[in-house]
Image (tube, rainbow, N blue to C red; front, side, top):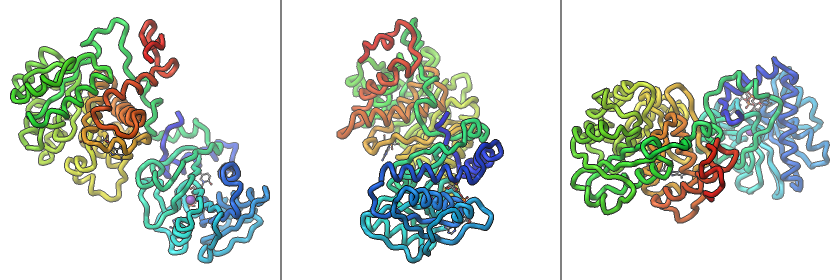
Amino acid sequence: MSHEILTPDEMAKADRLAIEGGPFDGYALMRNAGAAVAALVLARFASASTVHVLCGPGNNGGDGYVVAKALVETGCAVKLWAEGSPKPGSDAALAAADCQLKAQPLGDFEMKPGALVVDALYGAGLSKPLSAEAGRAAQLAADMKVPVVSVDLPSGLSGESGATLGEAFQATITVTFARKKPGHLLLPGRNLCGEVVVADIGIGDKVIDAVGARCFENVPALWLDKFPMPALDAYKYSRGHVGVFSGGPSATGAARLAAMAAARIGAGAVTVLSPSLSLSVNASHLTSIMLRKADTLEEVFGFLDARHPEALVYGPGLGPEPGVGNFLLDLLAAAENSPKGLVLDADGLTSLAAQPEALFAALHRMGAPRAILTPHEGEFRRLFPGIAEDEKLSKLEKARAASRLSNAVVVYKGPDTVIAAPDGRAAINSNGTPLLATAGSGDVLAGICAGLLAQGMPAFEAGCAAVWIHADAAQRFGPGLIAEDLPLALLSVLRNLREPGALPVPPGSLAAGKTLS
Ligand SMILES: NC(=O)C1=CN([C@@H]2O[C@H](COP(=O)(O)OP(=O)(O)OC[C@H]3O[C@@H](n4cnc5c(N)ncnc54)[C@H](O)[C@@H]3O)[C@@H](O)[C@H]2O)[C@@H](O)CC1
Ligand SMILES: Nc1ncnc2c1ncn2[C@@H]1O[C@H](COP(=O)(O)OP(=O)(O)O)[C@@H](O)[C@H]1O
Ligand SMILES: [K+]
Protein backbone atom coordinates (compact mmCIF):
# COMPACT_ATOMS: atom_id res chain seq x y z
CA MET A 1 0.00 0.00 0.00
CA SER A 2 1.26 3.45 -0.71
CA HIS A 3 -1.41 5.49 1.05
CA GLU A 4 -0.02 5.20 4.56
CA ILE A 5 0.38 8.51 6.34
CA LEU A 6 3.41 8.67 8.60
CA THR A 7 3.80 10.92 11.62
CA PRO A 8 7.16 12.68 11.79
CA ASP A 9 8.26 10.12 14.44
CA GLU A 10 7.27 7.24 12.18
CA MET A 11 9.08 8.91 9.29
CA ALA A 12 12.21 9.22 11.41
CA LYS A 13 11.89 5.52 12.23
CA ALA A 14 11.52 4.71 8.51
CA ASP A 15 14.60 6.79 7.87
CA ARG A 16 16.58 4.81 10.48
CA LEU A 17 15.37 1.45 9.20
CA ALA A 18 16.15 2.40 5.61
CA ILE A 19 19.67 3.45 6.54
CA GLU A 20 20.21 0.24 8.54
CA GLY A 21 18.93 -1.89 5.66
CA GLY A 22 20.82 0.00 2.96
CA PRO A 23 21.77 0.60 0.26
CA PHE A 24 21.40 4.32 0.99
CA ASP A 25 23.05 5.93 4.00
CA GLY A 26 21.65 9.12 5.55
CA TYR A 27 23.52 11.47 3.26
CA ALA A 28 22.49 9.44 0.21
CA LEU A 29 18.83 9.72 1.24
CA MET A 30 19.35 13.46 1.64
CA ARG A 31 20.93 13.67 -1.83
CA ASN A 32 17.98 11.72 -3.26
CA ALA A 33 15.57 14.10 -1.53
CA GLY A 34 17.39 17.19 -2.77
CA ALA A 35 17.64 15.75 -6.29
CA ALA A 36 13.86 15.15 -6.34
CA VAL A 37 13.19 18.76 -5.32
CA ALA A 38 15.69 20.12 -7.85
CA ALA A 39 14.11 18.02 -10.61
CA LEU A 40 10.70 19.42 -9.75
CA VAL A 41 12.02 22.98 -9.76
CA LEU A 42 13.49 22.43 -13.22
CA ALA A 43 10.36 20.75 -14.51
CA ARG A 44 8.01 23.46 -13.27
CA PHE A 45 9.97 26.65 -12.69
CA ALA A 46 12.99 26.54 -15.00
CA SER A 47 12.31 30.09 -16.16
CA ALA A 48 12.48 31.63 -12.67
CA SER A 49 14.90 34.56 -12.76
CA THR A 50 16.65 33.49 -9.55
CA VAL A 51 16.07 30.54 -7.25
CA HIS A 52 16.42 31.59 -3.60
CA VAL A 53 17.13 28.55 -1.44
CA LEU A 54 16.47 29.14 2.27
CA CYS A 55 18.25 26.61 4.50
CA GLY A 56 17.68 25.85 8.18
CA PRO A 57 20.16 24.20 10.55
CA GLY A 58 18.75 20.64 10.42
CA ASN A 59 18.28 18.00 7.76
CA ASN A 60 15.60 20.05 6.02
CA GLY A 61 18.29 22.65 5.45
CA GLY A 62 20.58 19.80 4.36
CA ASP A 63 18.11 18.96 1.60
CA GLY A 64 18.22 22.65 0.67
CA TYR A 65 22.01 22.65 0.21
CA VAL A 66 21.65 19.65 -2.11
CA VAL A 67 18.95 21.47 -4.11
CA ALA A 68 21.13 24.59 -4.41
CA LYS A 69 24.14 22.58 -5.59
CA ALA A 70 22.11 20.63 -8.16
CA LEU A 71 20.51 23.79 -9.56
CA VAL A 72 23.81 25.66 -9.78
CA GLU A 73 25.24 22.74 -11.72
CA THR A 74 22.44 22.96 -14.28
CA GLY A 75 23.17 26.67 -14.79
CA CYS A 76 20.34 28.20 -12.74
CA ALA A 77 20.91 31.50 -10.95
CA VAL A 78 20.79 30.48 -7.30
CA LYS A 79 21.12 32.45 -4.08
CA LEU A 80 21.51 30.74 -0.74
CA TRP A 81 20.24 32.11 2.58
CA ALA A 82 20.80 30.31 5.85
CA GLU A 83 19.45 30.43 9.38
CA GLY A 84 21.95 28.83 11.73
CA SER A 85 24.44 26.28 10.53
CA PRO A 86 24.32 22.50 10.52
CA LYS A 87 25.73 20.51 13.44
CA PRO A 88 29.32 19.48 12.66
CA GLY A 89 29.45 15.88 11.47
CA SER A 90 25.75 15.77 10.49
CA ASP A 91 24.52 14.86 7.01
CA ALA A 92 23.39 18.46 6.65
CA ALA A 93 26.94 19.63 7.39
CA LEU A 94 28.20 17.33 4.62
CA ALA A 95 25.64 18.78 2.25
CA ALA A 96 26.57 22.35 3.19
CA ALA A 97 30.27 21.59 2.70
CA ASP A 98 29.55 20.03 -0.72
CA CYS A 99 27.60 23.09 -1.86
CA GLN A 100 29.77 25.57 -3.71
CA LEU A 101 27.61 28.61 -2.85
CA LYS A 102 28.28 30.81 0.14
CA ALA A 103 25.17 31.36 2.22
CA GLN A 104 24.05 34.83 3.29
CA PRO A 105 22.25 35.36 6.61
CA LEU A 106 18.48 34.82 6.37
CA GLY A 107 17.92 38.16 8.11
CA ASP A 108 19.23 39.90 4.95
CA PHE A 109 16.94 37.93 2.61
CA GLU A 110 15.64 39.95 -0.30
CA MET A 111 14.51 39.14 -3.82
CA LYS A 112 13.11 40.60 -7.01
CA PRO A 113 9.85 39.71 -8.76
CA GLY A 114 10.11 36.67 -11.04
CA ALA A 115 12.09 34.71 -8.49
CA LEU A 116 11.33 31.32 -6.95
CA VAL A 117 11.74 30.44 -3.26
CA VAL A 118 12.81 26.98 -2.16
CA ASP A 119 11.80 26.76 1.50
CA ALA A 120 14.18 24.32 3.22
CA LEU A 121 14.18 25.96 6.65
CA TYR A 122 12.30 23.45 8.80
CA GLY A 123 10.49 20.24 8.07
CA ALA A 124 9.70 17.36 10.36
CA GLY A 125 11.88 18.78 13.13
CA LEU A 126 9.95 22.02 13.64
CA SER A 127 9.73 22.38 17.41
CA LYS A 128 8.95 26.05 18.06
CA PRO A 129 7.58 29.06 16.19
CA LEU A 130 9.65 30.44 13.32
CA SER A 131 12.18 33.12 14.22
CA ALA A 132 11.40 36.71 13.31
CA GLU A 133 13.79 36.40 10.33
CA ALA A 134 12.16 33.23 9.02
CA GLY A 135 8.70 34.72 9.58
CA ARG A 136 9.74 37.82 7.62
CA ALA A 137 10.96 35.62 4.76
CA ALA A 138 7.59 33.82 4.67
CA GLN A 139 5.79 37.15 4.64
CA LEU A 140 8.03 38.56 1.90
CA ALA A 141 7.37 35.57 -0.35
CA ALA A 142 3.62 35.98 0.22
CA ASP A 143 3.69 39.75 -0.35
CA MET A 144 5.68 39.40 -3.58
CA LYS A 145 3.46 36.52 -4.72
CA VAL A 146 6.43 34.47 -5.88
CA PRO A 147 6.00 30.70 -6.15
CA VAL A 148 7.33 28.73 -3.19
CA VAL A 149 8.50 25.12 -3.31
CA SER A 150 8.57 23.80 0.25
CA VAL A 151 10.83 20.90 1.08
CA ASP A 152 8.93 18.22 3.02
CA LEU A 153 6.59 20.73 4.71
CA PRO A 154 6.02 24.47 4.55
CA SER A 155 8.27 25.82 7.32
CA GLY A 156 6.18 26.85 10.32
CA LEU A 157 3.72 23.99 9.84
CA SER A 158 3.55 20.98 12.15
CA GLY A 159 3.77 17.76 10.20
CA GLU A 160 2.12 16.02 13.11
CA SER A 161 -1.04 18.09 13.41
CA GLY A 162 -1.38 20.41 10.42
CA ALA A 163 -1.36 23.35 12.84
CA THR A 164 0.94 26.33 12.54
CA LEU A 165 3.12 27.47 15.39
CA GLY A 166 2.99 31.12 14.27
CA GLU A 167 4.05 32.39 10.85
CA ALA A 168 4.30 29.77 8.12
CA PHE A 169 5.18 29.62 4.45
CA GLN A 170 2.40 29.33 1.90
CA ALA A 171 3.73 26.81 -0.59
CA THR A 172 2.80 26.51 -4.22
CA ILE A 173 4.12 22.96 -4.24
CA THR A 174 5.34 20.85 -1.35
CA VAL A 175 7.67 17.98 -2.14
CA THR A 176 7.63 15.40 0.60
CA PHE A 177 9.44 12.11 0.83
CA ALA A 178 8.28 8.47 0.90
CA ARG A 179 4.78 9.16 2.30
CA LYS A 180 2.55 12.09 3.25
CA LYS A 181 2.41 13.25 6.87
CA PRO A 182 -0.81 14.20 8.74
CA GLY A 183 0.09 17.90 8.36
CA HIS A 184 -0.24 17.62 4.59
CA LEU A 185 -3.92 16.66 4.90
CA LEU A 186 -5.20 18.22 8.12
CA LEU A 187 -6.23 21.87 8.08
CA PRO A 188 -4.80 24.46 7.95
CA GLY A 189 -1.79 22.46 6.72
CA ARG A 190 -3.54 21.19 3.62
CA ASN A 191 -4.14 24.77 2.48
CA LEU A 192 -0.54 25.81 3.19
CA CYS A 193 1.01 22.92 1.26
CA GLY A 194 -0.42 23.74 -2.15
CA GLU A 195 0.06 20.76 -4.43
CA VAL A 196 1.70 17.88 -2.58
CA VAL A 197 4.18 15.75 -4.51
CA VAL A 198 5.46 12.58 -2.87
CA ALA A 199 8.96 11.68 -4.07
CA ASP A 200 10.45 8.21 -3.83
CA ILE A 201 13.89 8.68 -2.26
CA GLY A 202 14.68 5.01 -1.79
CA ILE A 203 12.71 4.18 1.36
CA GLY A 204 10.98 1.02 0.16
CA ASP A 205 7.55 -0.39 0.94
CA LYS A 206 9.08 -3.04 3.21
CA VAL A 207 10.52 -0.33 5.42
CA ILE A 208 7.18 1.48 5.53
CA ASP A 209 5.45 -1.82 6.43
CA ALA A 210 7.94 -2.35 9.25
CA VAL A 211 7.06 1.03 10.71
CA GLY A 212 3.48 -0.23 11.16
CA ALA A 213 1.68 3.03 10.44
CA ARG A 214 -2.02 2.87 11.21
CA CYS A 215 -3.17 6.01 9.48
CA PHE A 216 -4.03 6.18 5.80
CA GLU A 217 -5.15 8.65 3.21
CA ASN A 218 -8.76 7.79 2.47
CA VAL A 219 -8.55 6.44 -1.07
CA PRO A 220 -10.72 3.70 -2.60
CA ALA A 221 -7.87 1.18 -2.40
CA LEU A 222 -8.31 1.31 1.38
CA TRP A 223 -11.81 -0.21 1.28
CA LEU A 224 -12.63 -1.32 -2.25
CA ASP A 225 -12.06 -5.00 -1.47
CA LYS A 226 -14.74 -4.80 1.23
CA PHE A 227 -17.19 -2.83 -0.88
CA PRO A 228 -20.46 -4.76 -1.14
CA MET A 229 -21.53 -6.28 -4.41
CA PRO A 230 -24.90 -8.03 -4.55
CA ALA A 231 -24.71 -11.76 -5.09
CA LEU A 232 -26.32 -13.10 -8.23
CA ASP A 233 -29.09 -14.68 -6.18
CA ALA A 234 -29.63 -11.60 -4.00
CA TYR A 235 -33.09 -10.58 -2.89
CA LYS A 236 -34.03 -7.29 -1.34
CA TYR A 237 -33.59 -8.27 2.31
CA SER A 238 -30.34 -10.12 1.70
CA ARG A 239 -28.92 -6.89 0.27
CA GLY A 240 -29.45 -5.28 3.66
CA HIS A 241 -32.31 -3.48 5.37
CA VAL A 242 -31.91 -0.02 6.92
CA GLY A 243 -34.31 1.61 9.38
CA VAL A 244 -34.20 5.41 9.62
CA PHE A 245 -35.88 7.24 12.50
CA SER A 246 -37.89 10.28 11.43
CA GLY A 247 -38.47 13.49 13.36
CA GLY A 248 -41.75 15.26 14.00
CA PRO A 249 -44.03 16.71 11.31
CA SER A 250 -41.86 19.74 10.61
CA ALA A 251 -38.54 17.84 10.63
CA THR A 252 -38.98 14.81 8.42
CA GLY A 253 -36.75 15.71 5.46
CA ALA A 254 -33.51 14.70 7.15
CA ALA A 255 -34.68 11.11 7.62
CA ARG A 256 -35.83 10.90 4.02
CA LEU A 257 -32.47 12.17 2.76
CA ALA A 258 -30.71 9.50 4.82
CA ALA A 259 -33.19 6.85 3.68
CA MET A 260 -32.78 7.70 0.01
CA ALA A 261 -28.99 7.65 0.34
CA ALA A 262 -29.08 4.25 2.06
CA ALA A 263 -31.19 2.88 -0.78
CA ARG A 264 -29.02 4.39 -3.52
CA ILE A 265 -25.82 3.02 -2.01
CA GLY A 266 -27.33 -0.43 -2.34
CA ALA A 267 -29.39 -1.39 0.70
CA GLY A 268 -32.16 -3.62 -0.69
CA ALA A 269 -34.83 -2.28 1.67
CA VAL A 270 -35.19 0.91 3.65
CA THR A 271 -37.88 1.74 6.18
CA VAL A 272 -38.58 5.13 7.70
CA LEU A 273 -39.68 4.74 11.32
CA SER A 274 -42.02 7.62 11.91
CA PRO A 275 -43.93 9.15 14.79
CA SER A 276 -47.64 8.90 14.01
CA LEU A 277 -47.86 12.68 13.73
CA SER A 278 -45.41 12.61 10.80
CA LEU A 279 -46.81 9.58 9.00
CA SER A 280 -48.84 11.51 6.46
CA VAL A 281 -46.09 13.95 5.54
CA ASN A 282 -43.62 11.06 5.19
CA ALA A 283 -46.14 8.99 3.23
CA SER A 284 -46.71 11.80 0.78
CA HIS A 285 -42.96 11.89 -0.03
CA LEU A 286 -41.97 8.22 -0.04
CA THR A 287 -42.43 5.70 -2.78
CA SER A 288 -39.95 2.81 -2.78
CA ILE A 289 -38.93 3.57 0.80
CA MET A 290 -41.20 1.82 3.31
CA LEU A 291 -42.90 3.57 6.20
CA ARG A 292 -43.75 2.27 9.64
CA LYS A 293 -45.26 3.87 12.69
CA ALA A 294 -42.86 3.94 15.61
CA ASP A 295 -44.10 6.07 18.51
CA THR A 296 -42.97 3.75 21.26
CA LEU A 297 -40.10 1.44 22.09
CA GLU A 298 -42.46 -1.51 21.76
CA GLU A 299 -43.25 -0.51 18.21
CA VAL A 300 -39.55 -0.22 17.43
CA PHE A 301 -38.85 -3.62 18.99
CA GLY A 302 -41.73 -5.00 16.94
CA PHE A 303 -40.03 -3.73 13.79
CA LEU A 304 -36.65 -5.13 14.83
CA ASP A 305 -38.16 -8.54 15.63
CA ALA A 306 -40.14 -8.73 12.43
CA ARG A 307 -37.72 -7.23 9.97
CA HIS A 308 -34.23 -7.70 11.44
CA PRO A 309 -32.76 -4.58 9.88
CA GLU A 310 -28.99 -4.68 9.62
CA ALA A 311 -28.56 -0.99 10.40
CA LEU A 312 -30.43 1.91 11.97
CA VAL A 313 -29.92 5.63 11.51
CA TYR A 314 -30.74 7.60 14.65
CA GLY A 315 -30.53 11.35 14.89
CA PRO A 316 -31.27 13.50 11.84
CA GLY A 317 -34.26 15.71 12.60
CA LEU A 318 -35.13 14.08 15.92
CA GLY A 319 -34.52 17.15 18.12
CA PRO A 320 -31.85 17.72 20.75
CA GLU A 321 -34.02 17.03 23.82
CA PRO A 322 -32.67 14.58 26.42
CA GLY A 323 -35.74 12.40 25.83
CA VAL A 324 -34.43 11.62 22.35
CA GLY A 325 -31.18 10.36 23.89
CA ASN A 326 -33.00 8.39 26.58
CA PHE A 327 -35.11 6.66 23.93
CA LEU A 328 -31.94 5.45 22.24
CA LEU A 329 -30.39 4.31 25.52
CA ASP A 330 -33.54 2.32 26.30
CA LEU A 331 -33.42 0.84 22.82
CA LEU A 332 -29.80 -0.22 23.30
CA ALA A 333 -30.36 -1.46 26.87
CA ALA A 334 -31.90 -4.76 25.85
CA ALA A 335 -29.01 -6.71 24.38
CA GLU A 336 -31.25 -9.06 22.42
CA ASN A 337 -32.72 -6.06 20.60
CA SER A 338 -29.40 -4.38 19.99
CA PRO A 339 -29.23 -3.43 16.31
CA LYS A 340 -26.60 -5.09 14.17
CA GLY A 341 -25.42 -1.73 12.92
CA LEU A 342 -26.10 1.80 14.10
CA VAL A 343 -25.33 5.25 12.72
CA LEU A 344 -25.65 8.08 15.21
CA ASP A 345 -25.72 11.55 13.75
CA ALA A 346 -26.90 15.07 14.54
CA ASP A 347 -29.51 15.12 17.36
CA GLY A 348 -28.74 11.49 18.14
CA LEU A 349 -25.39 12.83 19.38
CA THR A 350 -26.51 16.18 20.79
CA SER A 351 -29.37 14.68 22.81
CA LEU A 352 -26.81 12.58 24.69
CA ALA A 353 -24.39 15.41 25.40
CA ALA A 354 -25.43 15.45 29.08
CA GLN A 355 -24.77 11.73 29.52
CA PRO A 356 -22.17 10.61 27.00
CA GLU A 357 -20.85 7.90 29.36
CA ALA A 358 -24.21 6.13 29.21
CA LEU A 359 -23.99 6.08 25.41
CA PHE A 360 -20.40 4.85 25.43
CA ALA A 361 -21.30 2.08 27.90
CA ALA A 362 -24.11 0.97 25.59
CA LEU A 363 -21.80 0.99 22.58
CA HIS A 364 -19.24 -1.06 24.49
CA ARG A 365 -21.99 -3.55 25.36
CA MET A 366 -22.75 -3.92 21.64
CA GLY A 367 -19.34 -5.57 21.33
CA ALA A 368 -17.30 -5.38 18.13
CA PRO A 369 -17.70 -1.87 16.80
CA ARG A 370 -20.96 -1.87 14.93
CA ALA A 371 -21.74 1.80 15.40
CA ILE A 372 -20.61 4.82 13.41
CA LEU A 373 -20.80 8.25 15.01
CA THR A 374 -20.73 11.15 12.54
CA PRO A 375 -20.18 14.35 14.55
CA HIS A 376 -19.36 17.69 12.97
CA GLU A 377 -17.13 20.05 14.95
CA GLY A 378 -19.92 21.26 17.28
CA GLU A 379 -21.35 17.80 17.92
CA PHE A 380 -17.87 16.46 18.59
CA ARG A 381 -17.28 19.19 21.17
CA ARG A 382 -20.58 18.43 22.86
CA LEU A 383 -20.06 14.67 23.05
CA PHE A 384 -16.32 14.57 23.71
CA PRO A 385 -15.58 17.84 25.56
CA GLY A 386 -12.43 16.59 27.31
CA ILE A 387 -10.89 15.40 24.05
CA ALA A 388 -12.03 18.40 22.01
CA GLU A 389 -10.45 20.85 24.43
CA ASP A 390 -7.07 19.09 24.57
CA GLU A 391 -4.96 21.45 22.50
CA LYS A 392 -2.06 19.01 22.37
CA LEU A 393 -4.08 16.64 20.21
CA SER A 394 -4.43 16.90 16.44
CA LYS A 395 -7.78 16.25 14.78
CA LEU A 396 -6.44 12.78 13.93
CA GLU A 397 -5.59 12.04 17.55
CA LYS A 398 -8.88 13.50 18.75
CA ALA A 399 -10.85 11.21 16.44
CA ARG A 400 -8.80 8.23 17.60
CA ALA A 401 -9.32 9.07 21.27
CA ALA A 402 -13.06 9.54 20.74
CA SER A 403 -13.28 6.23 18.93
CA ARG A 404 -11.49 4.36 21.71
CA LEU A 405 -13.67 6.01 24.34
CA SER A 406 -16.94 5.26 22.58
CA ASN A 407 -16.11 1.90 20.98
CA ALA A 408 -17.55 3.26 17.75
CA VAL A 409 -16.08 4.25 14.44
CA VAL A 410 -15.92 8.02 14.62
CA VAL A 411 -16.34 10.05 11.46
CA TYR A 412 -15.14 13.47 12.63
CA LYS A 413 -16.53 15.60 9.81
CA GLY A 414 -15.30 18.75 8.14
CA PRO A 415 -13.15 19.74 5.18
CA ASP A 416 -10.53 17.32 6.54
CA THR A 417 -12.80 14.53 7.80
CA VAL A 418 -11.01 11.93 9.92
CA ILE A 419 -12.38 8.41 10.25
CA ALA A 420 -11.08 6.45 13.26
CA ALA A 421 -11.66 2.95 14.59
CA PRO A 422 -11.27 1.82 18.21
CA ASP A 423 -8.38 -0.46 17.21
CA GLY A 424 -6.28 2.58 16.22
CA ARG A 425 -6.77 2.54 12.47
CA ALA A 426 -7.55 5.94 11.04
CA ALA A 427 -7.96 7.63 7.69
CA ILE A 428 -7.83 11.26 6.66
CA ASN A 429 -10.07 12.23 3.80
CA SER A 430 -8.67 14.41 1.06
CA ASN A 431 -11.34 14.57 -1.67
CA GLY A 432 -13.71 16.81 0.32
CA THR A 433 -15.27 19.80 -1.38
CA PRO A 434 -16.91 22.92 0.03
CA LEU A 435 -19.90 22.05 -2.16
CA LEU A 436 -20.80 19.73 0.72
CA ALA A 437 -21.29 22.69 3.02
CA THR A 438 -25.03 22.64 2.35
CA ALA A 439 -27.85 21.80 4.73
CA GLY A 440 -28.70 18.12 4.82
CA SER A 441 -25.52 16.78 3.29
CA GLY A 442 -24.62 15.24 6.66
CA ASP A 443 -27.95 13.39 6.69
CA VAL A 444 -27.05 11.90 3.33
CA LEU A 445 -23.66 10.82 4.69
CA ALA A 446 -25.37 9.09 7.62
CA GLY A 447 -27.59 7.22 5.16
CA ILE A 448 -24.62 6.11 3.05
CA CYS A 449 -22.86 4.83 6.17
CA ALA A 450 -25.94 2.86 7.19
CA GLY A 451 -26.50 1.50 3.70
CA LEU A 452 -22.96 0.15 3.61
CA LEU A 453 -23.17 -1.26 7.16
CA ALA A 454 -26.41 -2.99 6.22
CA GLN A 455 -24.71 -4.65 3.27
CA GLY A 456 -22.14 -6.17 5.62
CA MET A 457 -19.26 -3.75 5.17
CA PRO A 458 -17.21 -3.52 8.39
CA ALA A 459 -17.77 -0.25 10.24
CA PHE A 460 -14.35 1.33 9.63
CA GLU A 461 -14.33 0.58 5.92
CA ALA A 462 -17.99 1.63 5.67
CA GLY A 463 -17.19 4.98 7.28
CA CYS A 464 -14.20 5.53 4.99
CA ALA A 465 -16.08 4.51 1.86
CA ALA A 466 -19.09 6.65 2.77
CA VAL A 467 -16.99 9.77 3.29
CA TRP A 468 -15.06 9.35 0.05
CA ILE A 469 -18.13 8.47 -2.03
CA HIS A 470 -20.15 11.37 -0.53
CA ALA A 471 -17.42 13.84 -1.54
CA ASP A 472 -16.90 12.27 -4.95
CA ALA A 473 -20.63 12.52 -5.61
CA ALA A 474 -20.56 16.22 -4.74
CA GLN A 475 -17.57 16.80 -7.00
CA ARG A 476 -19.20 15.00 -9.89
CA PHE A 477 -22.45 16.94 -9.48
CA GLY A 478 -20.64 20.26 -9.22
CA PRO A 479 -21.79 23.77 -8.32
CA GLY A 480 -25.42 24.23 -7.46
CA LEU A 481 -25.50 21.02 -5.45
CA ILE A 482 -28.07 20.71 -2.69
CA ALA A 483 -28.46 17.71 -0.42
CA GLU A 484 -31.40 16.35 -2.43
CA ASP A 485 -29.06 15.94 -5.41
CA LEU A 486 -26.56 13.76 -3.56
CA PRO A 487 -28.42 10.41 -3.52
CA LEU A 488 -28.83 10.54 -7.30
CA ALA A 489 -25.26 11.75 -7.78
CA LEU A 490 -24.17 8.48 -6.15
CA LEU A 491 -25.03 6.68 -9.36
CA SER A 492 -22.13 8.17 -11.23
CA VAL A 493 -19.72 7.37 -8.39
CA LEU A 494 -20.90 3.78 -8.20
CA ARG A 495 -20.73 3.31 -11.93
CA ASN A 496 -17.16 4.51 -11.89
CA LEU A 497 -16.21 2.29 -8.95
CA ARG A 498 -17.64 -0.65 -10.82
CA GLU A 499 -15.69 -0.12 -13.98
CA PRO A 500 -14.09 -3.39 -15.04
CA GLY A 501 -11.05 -3.98 -12.92
CA ALA A 502 -11.99 -1.47 -10.21
CA LEU A 503 -14.12 -3.93 -8.30
CA PRO A 504 -14.59 -7.68 -8.35
CA VAL A 505 -17.68 -7.92 -10.51
CA PRO A 506 -19.74 -11.11 -10.12
CA PRO A 507 -20.16 -12.86 -13.48
CA GLY A 508 -23.53 -12.21 -15.01
CA SER A 509 -24.21 -8.99 -13.10
CA LEU A 510 -25.28 -5.89 -14.98
CA ALA A 511 -22.02 -4.18 -14.11
CA ALA A 512 -20.06 -6.88 -15.91
CA GLY A 513 -21.69 -5.97 -19.22
CA LYS A 514 -21.06 -2.20 -19.06
CA THR A 515 -24.80 -1.71 -19.58
CA LEU A 516 -25.03 0.46 -16.51
CA SER A 517 -23.46 3.45 -18.24
N1 LIG B 1 13.44 10.02 5.46
C1 LIG B 1 13.55 11.17 6.00
O1 LIG B 1 12.91 11.43 7.01
C2 LIG B 1 14.42 12.17 5.37
C3 LIG B 1 14.34 13.45 5.85
N2 LIG B 1 14.97 14.44 5.26
C4 LIG B 1 14.80 15.80 5.73
O2 LIG B 1 15.03 15.91 7.10
C5 LIG B 1 14.06 16.75 7.66
C6 LIG B 1 14.00 16.52 9.13
O3 LIG B 1 15.23 16.89 9.62
P1 LIG B 1 15.47 17.33 11.11
O4 LIG B 1 14.93 16.31 12.02
O5 LIG B 1 16.91 17.67 11.21
O6 LIG B 1 14.54 18.58 11.28
P2 LIG B 1 14.54 20.07 10.68
O7 LIG B 1 15.54 20.25 9.65
O8 LIG B 1 13.13 20.34 10.35
O9 LIG B 1 14.92 20.99 11.93
C7 LIG B 1 15.62 20.51 12.99
C8 LIG B 1 16.49 21.53 13.71
O10 LIG B 1 15.93 22.82 13.78
C9 LIG B 1 15.68 23.20 15.15
N3 LIG B 1 14.42 23.93 15.09
C10 LIG B 1 13.20 23.41 14.97
N4 LIG B 1 12.29 24.39 14.87
C11 LIG B 1 12.98 25.55 14.90
C12 LIG B 1 12.62 26.92 14.82
N5 LIG B 1 11.37 27.28 14.64
N6 LIG B 1 13.58 27.86 14.91
C13 LIG B 1 14.86 27.52 15.05
N7 LIG B 1 15.28 26.23 15.12
C14 LIG B 1 14.34 25.26 15.06
C15 LIG B 1 15.61 21.91 15.90
O11 LIG B 1 15.90 22.10 17.26
C16 LIG B 1 16.67 21.11 15.15
O12 LIG B 1 17.96 21.49 15.52
C17 LIG B 1 12.83 16.42 6.89
O13 LIG B 1 11.84 17.42 7.00
C18 LIG B 1 13.38 16.29 5.49
O14 LIG B 1 13.43 17.54 4.84
C19 LIG B 1 15.77 14.25 4.05
O15 LIG B 1 17.08 14.63 4.32
C20 LIG B 1 15.71 12.91 3.44
C21 LIG B 1 15.34 11.78 4.29
N1 LIG C 1 -15.81 23.05 3.40
C1 LIG C 1 -16.07 21.73 3.35
N2 LIG C 1 -15.26 20.91 2.65
C2 LIG C 1 -15.53 19.59 2.59
N3 LIG C 1 -16.57 19.00 3.20
C3 LIG C 1 -17.39 19.75 3.91
C4 LIG C 1 -17.20 21.15 4.04
N4 LIG C 1 -18.18 21.62 4.83
C5 LIG C 1 -18.96 20.58 5.17
N5 LIG C 1 -18.50 19.44 4.62
C6 LIG C 1 -19.07 18.09 4.75
O1 LIG C 1 -20.49 18.20 4.58
C7 LIG C 1 -21.18 17.42 5.52
C8 LIG C 1 -22.00 18.34 6.40
O2 LIG C 1 -22.58 17.63 7.44
P1 LIG C 1 -23.32 18.35 8.64
O3 LIG C 1 -22.47 19.41 9.20
O4 LIG C 1 -23.83 17.29 9.54
O5 LIG C 1 -24.51 19.09 7.88
P2 LIG C 1 -26.09 18.89 7.98
O6 LIG C 1 -26.44 18.74 9.42
O7 LIG C 1 -26.64 20.14 7.40
O8 LIG C 1 -26.44 17.70 7.19
C9 LIG C 1 -20.11 16.63 6.26
O9 LIG C 1 -19.90 15.40 5.63
C10 LIG C 1 -18.87 17.51 6.13
O10 LIG C 1 -17.68 16.80 6.23
K1 LIG D 1 10.42 23.29 4.68
